[in-house]
Length: 522
Image 1 (cartoon, rainbow, N blue to C red):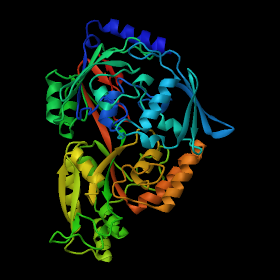
Image 2 (cartoon, rainbow, N blue to C red; image 1 turned 45 degrees about the vertical axis):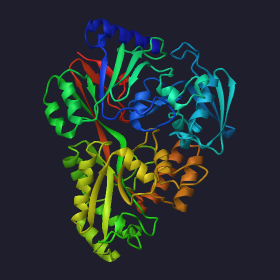
Image 3 (cartoon, rainbow, N blue to C red; image 1 turned 180 degrees about the vertical axis):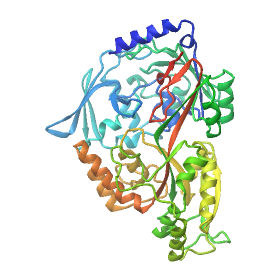
């Protein structure tokens, strides 16, 4: 199959002659990568950049279905549900010519679970792993602490490096000590300017049409669009909603939208009796914290017009959400449609809960991370004011906001999450799992939600080995946690890409902007 695909793309390049395929592909991205260390940051901007260089054992196609990556197969032992046998591709080499093998995988997984410096983004994916044993150069034995049918989903996360690089620190990777097995190899990285890549001629996958790829950070949305229209960029992501209509009417621009797993939601502090940004008129924290009252949280959800957010604020680049993954995905619940817009009922619930008239809430949120994030923040605060809540929107750079949330310096916040593994398990355990457990769950459960019934349901789902029963068990866990409104889903973001004439893009449910999804177009 790889040879046939390679031949087809080579033929396409010959037919196009000196067209787009002979040029570098210049991609304008909204957020630049922060590091070249593949095990440090699991944020989408980092992941999409580094997936050009590194690969994972299991990966996803554009529709987010699991497909083989560096692993040719993965099989649960029918006699022992805690044992998996992973067999690797035999035709893979690293960019520097080293052969790829099982020892590289073992070293990469160990580093992902415990990276140098002790700070990384992938450890929680692999808390279930008890041991990784190399059986031979192409085979590994993976043991989990309990039956874990979701292991293939988790294997989409950790990127594989040569075993000799496993001891290197992040600084070495950032300085250029980078070699992977992916379709492109590193040429250079200038922070704030460009990540430069060259085609890996020895890649095991289909031949790529782009000899070079330039990933160019353009955080200003107007600058991205202007660069595309001026011919300085060939492909841009996160097309601003204000430009969708204009670009759609141009015959020299291609426009593509795709629904993604990116959920935008509200975090609420329902654990602390006094919360720092739920105060009286004098700025003193209210006791008891009114967000602990389920009626107040439900009122907040009912006050939000999700259809207006999706159509007016987001310009159609969103779909109202009622849970952490889109309908139809493994673990989605059939019982949780988006909450209706009912401001009258919201006001009634506030009265019933005895919401203090002097209550003041600060709604924190990012202004540089998600499409229209600050506009959404302001719109939500405005909707909440209409039911009588005094809400002040406070927009911050995402790096600042994230640091504050980690320290517990927030009470009410706009946030986002993309479930890149492909089912609800990752979102549930990362966003709602109790912190402090040996499982390592709850790494983004900043405000400390904990529910024993939910934990038991999630534990049961994580040990279920039948795929259909596992999805149903995840839905049951969802049915327990989401009505608590520890997080309030707003909408699933639709990703928008635009290309100039001569270039095309295949939209992806993971919202990644990857050179392998771009193609020369007549």
